[in-house]
Length: 276
Ligand SMILES: [Zn+2]
Image (cartoon, rainbow, N blue to C red; front, side, top):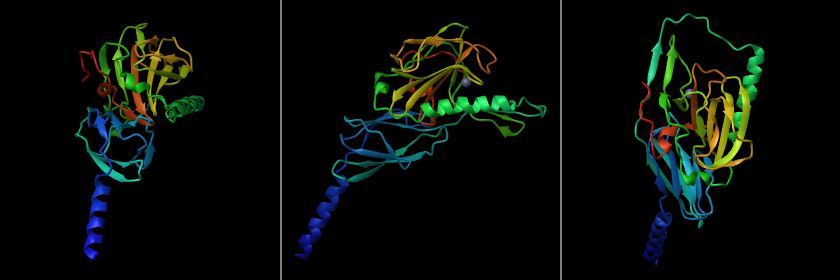
């Protein structure tokens, strides 16, 4: 009898272990990447101690930041209450670090009025990065917002007089002023701002599940807040509004507050020249 109970327990335990299917993951397993995953409908996913939105068909997305740990894991809770921890190994990635020493100590600091404006601008951007809408517009794919010379890559960082500045959190594409900027993916216009202190004319698009894209320094904005745009639709024109030294588009993609590398996310035609 004892043996039978033990055998039953072992059977039940092994059943429990194998009850949850692994999530199918699509995307590059590398820092800066966006991953699309699929689990059994009705499952729950925990990632970094937070519950991730899972659509009724079992689709979810994960993002890995610039300095993401190379060993990651997700916890899958299936509709029957069984859990399974799936490990994800990321490839190591290095970034371009430029050290510039011997700069004069004095630098431009924004005055108190500017600081107030910068804070308000950042709060507006942060609000969009809190959205967790149930649309799955990211499933429609991603494209370049404009083609041109890449003058700045994701993750690069400058160290001025030994002080590291914040890493570049998007891609800079140099293009003549007035060139059309396209929506990188289908989504809803979540922010339109005509004059941000650093970013100038700024547009943000919500693609669903916490994924958003941002387009800054534009000379013109062609969309309104709340408008639905499809992938490849014109949203504005390249400029150098805000703090920019030449006409270019700064383009970013974030999953909530985690900045991702747009170049790992777009498919199709790519730009030819890479920045140093
Ligand atoms: Zn930039």
